[in-house]
Amino acid sequence: MDDPPAPALAEFADLERVLARAANIAVGAIRPEDPLLALGAEGKGTCLLDGGQSRAHRKALAALLGGRAVKCGHDIKETLSSLERLDLDLAEPMFDARLAAYCLNLPREKPVVGEDAAAALVRKTVRALSERAALESRMKDAGVLDLYRDMELPLVRVLRGMEKAGVAVDETYLRRLSREFSSAIADLQAELDAMAGFPINVNSPKQLAALLFDKLQLPEVHKTSKGGRSTDEETLKVLAARHPIAEKILNYRELAKLQSTYVEGLLQRLDPKTGRVHTTFDQTGAETGRLSSLNPNLQNIPIRSESGQKIRRAFVAPKGWLLVSADYSQIDLRVLAHVSGDEVLRDSFSRGEDVHLRTACEVFHVLPEKVDADMRRKAKAVNFGIVYGQTAFGLAGQLGIPQAEAADIIKRYFERYSGVSRWFEKNQEEAKKAGAVRTFLGRLRRIPELSAKNAAVRQFGERAARNTPIQGGSADIIKLAMLAVSRELERMDGKARMILQIHDELLFEAPEAGAPAFAGKMRKIMEGAAKLDVPLVVDVKAGPNWRDMETLKA
DNA sequence: CATGTCACG
DNA sequence: ACGTACGTGACATGA
Image 1 (cartoon, chains in turn red, purple, orange):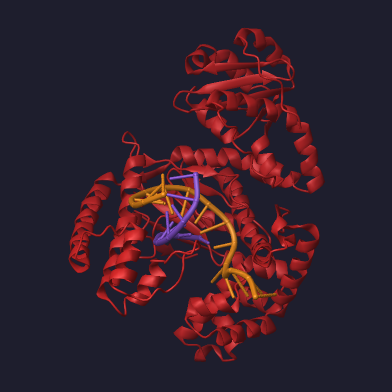
Image 2 (cartoon, rainbow, N blue to C red):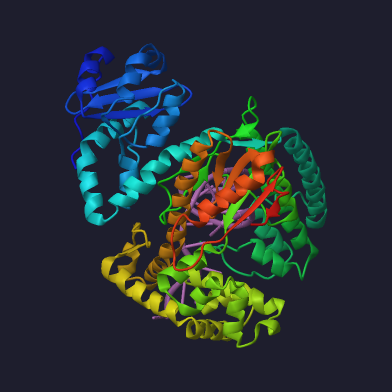
């Protein structure tokens, strides 16, 4: 498609009458703190307004943006965010070119070199208007128009509401934690310096490799992707058997990570006026249809380690409220059961069994009462690996078992779960033919790597082709749930809020008194968000912070 | 700006 | 023979 003509800057008044009569108008805004607006109509040039001008024209803008014209833009969520500052909103109908391109899984637009923010805003906004018809037609042809119109576009406002609401953080607690971590890090640094015999910067993989492999002559465990000598966690765990410094480095790394990324990162992003942090959800970043979260990323808050849990404790409910968490149980494997139709997997979920235990029974040929913790652990790794296209090599590495044993386990898995095996075959064949895969709700991912000459590249494509219908199918389900939940929250008129999505979990805050009933309501909505051939099961918990949550029974 | 590392689902 | 588990984002280092 041709680039639009260079936008002419015009006075707002010159355009206002044209815009008021237009069926489609171009609307874009950036810089929430100091809004910059672009407005235009087909063939009528563009008007650029800064924050001050926007305020002066607020009344006229409200009429235009609240009118019946199709508001066409590029990244509507960003536009909504900037307009909030002027107390303005966009009324339906809308068109979001960026979201349309995402649903079509088109390659991402490269940034124009040397272009300033205002010029980029005008260019993208005007293009959104001129490309609307073509993009809608392409979406129809590609079978993703319903996905765009009924799922992604309505989700924009829901996500903006979550971003705006933010999450409360206990600043006093976090500052105390910062001092605690700093002191522990300083102690570890002193011990490391003493053990190394010189001041060692553990944050430098280069210095660390020199210490471990040159000075201390410890064995190299594996290479980095670029051929260097790796000092990662896996390596250090191996080296821990040969030298006490490895363990110290691991301890240092853990705390340094938590301190820099989470404690300091969150304090930096905390709004001192409200005591809340506000993430941005990227609705168009992930190839599989998942969301991502940035500035700060609130989808990777620690949970696994003890020190990590101290970070979770910093996320709190306001006084008189509770956090409510609702997470889908085994959603990926349920989606696999649904798309593959595998009888054993379906049976397992229909009966409400422990799926990892069932897999252990199937692959080890034993009765449930004979399954020990190690067998279940292995079975769990197999269930994870299956979804990712894991090889015997990978499973062996994961479990620390010989490759032959891993190959045997995988072989038995596919014998017992033959429906899964057949679905993988069929999916692979169709993916190769189409150069793309879809989720069961029609979301599309093109995978050009499937026809690569290079075997490694092609195999990567094959794993992506296996994983995407599953991970993407799960993403579709939780998005539907979020839409259904948000409709209920509107009915509740602000008596509770949805504040985060973490791929298979939704986090809410709700008044303490009504929290159990609220949690039950959310559970029901989420379990009913999509109709699969197996039940969807949601576990709900509530508590004063994101660490101390108690399970609520149905 | 690339690299290595590591936090999460 | 190929390389070896999918999807993200943030941080520190050092060229």
